[in-house]
Amino acid sequence: SEEKSLNFIEEIIEEDLKNGKYKSIVTRFPPEPNGYLHLGHASSICLNFGLTKKFAGYTNLRFDDTNPVTEETEYVESIKEDVKWLGFEWKHELYASDYFDTLYEYALKLIGKGLAYVDDSTSEEIAAMKGTPVEAGKESPYRNRSIEENLELFKQMKAGAFADGTRTLRARIDMASTNMLMRDPVLYRIKHAHHHRTGDKWCIYPMYDMAHGQSDSIEHVTHSICTLEFVPHRELYDWLIEHLEIYPSHQYEFARRNINYTVTSKRKLLQLVNEKHVTGWDDPRMPTISGLRRRGYTPGSIRDFCDRIGVAKRENMVDVGLLEFCVREDLNKIAQRRMVVFEPLKIIITDYPEGKTELVQSEDNPEAGEKTYRDVPFSRELYIEQEDFMENPPKKFFRLAPGQMVRLKSAYIIKCDEVVKDEAGTITALKCSHVANSKTGEENAGMKVKGTLHWVSVQHAVPVEIRLYDRLFKVEDPSSEEGDFKDYINPGSLQVIKSAFAEPALKNAKFDEHYQFLRKGYFNLDKDTSEEGLVFNRTVTLKDTWAK
Ligand code: ATP
Ligand code: MG
Ligand code: MG
Image (cartoon, rainbow, N blue to C red; front, side):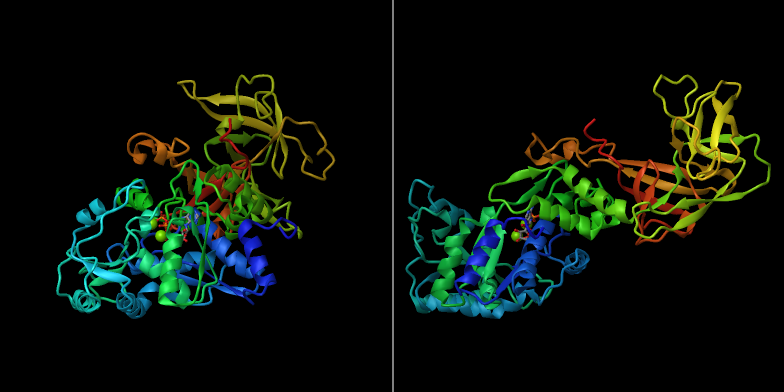
């Protein structure tokens, strides 16, 4: 991506470095620990960490933990794990809650300058006084309290003298501003709630605008990047920094990333978890980093995806097909090829000796630089896929049919001689014969056959559970549809095959390895694997089957 042109944020930074505004840059990734990270966050992570990789500087991980009610330590841990797994290293691990004392001092400073006041109005009264975009707001009756009275009341707020919602601290700016956020925004609220880090020390908590820019400033963040909905906040961000006379961080905005057939909102994802539409935050159908990891996505494929969608100034929907393309590209290079039969049909090679087992060699990965092979046991009775046989095939059926020949992958060419049926007429097995010396490199290998099938030796087959996933939602943008977004959940998003048959090499499958099950897609071992058996997830199909 070296020769790719710079995105607009990179252009700003390059200019800032060139004209000496900064010697090096500092960015931050600022998640609120109220849920697990999702693909939207991945895009912000890749952007923030990517910038300081490209230009001199570093990135902090800062937990924006100013809302005690929704935040939990479990989320902090998962966020750290996910950022690391994506391949990024933060310089400092920081918490907005560590600045509560400083932020309180900042509030006192604003009050001391006559720029903030304690308001006894309820939130409804404050909202009613806000006015409309075309009509100035009304000043609060508490707006002209003396500095002394405000200092005293704010200290009492901190000391716990008042109940939740009875008072706020507001900035004293301009009730006629065309920017609604500048109409005396609330800076502090009373909330008698336990905080995941500060415990019960505080009963007043700063609002987003009284915490985010100030935290940026304390950390000397040079480029504070957020999503477009914060554009109106920038004026307030700058106003507070100016009047607090603190380090001037600057805010830049880029478009939020939305991916089709899913939702990227922690609040909505939490609903899916709580209401058990999925098994947890790491359900392989979830667009969370932990879900994608469990499903077999690689960190490189997610970084590649974020890189390809880039940075935009306008919101748009990104096709999940691009993410699938990225992971296929990566897995094609690293996945070990294996054979697994999902819906078995037994075939008997009648001219192959009973009791004999032959080990055929099969390549682990034709894309790998260094060729390695594994042994696959071949014997008289094999499983092939039911769908790979048709008794009365149409013209272009390139698989097995009565009298037709196919190659068994890495083994012999076989011919179907007879279809065996039970009394009800259901096919129970096929009797086949094999062409001697037809393995690759042998003298009869060159015969023209219909196709190549994957197979597993019956006596060596390992039963495994297979989980196939489809889109979690039936529509591209469930959030924009009428009614509840959960009405659009795809009921067929999970398909379980309880007893598929795998070649024995998969007995040694590892959690950090990726597999291509021939003709079936890319797979990885799921964490539900136990003594009872192996469970595999399909990460992605081999080709895009969605567009059909
Ligand atoms: P959510 O709606 O999922 O709660 P959020 O923006 O409230 O998202 P934060 O924890 O505050 O979640 O996000 C941390 C950072 O990630 C922020 O800088 C935010 O702008 C960015 N971010 C979150 N969602 C997206 C997205 N869909 N696309 C790009 N960046 C995002
Ligand atoms: Mg946020
Ligand atoms: Mg949020």
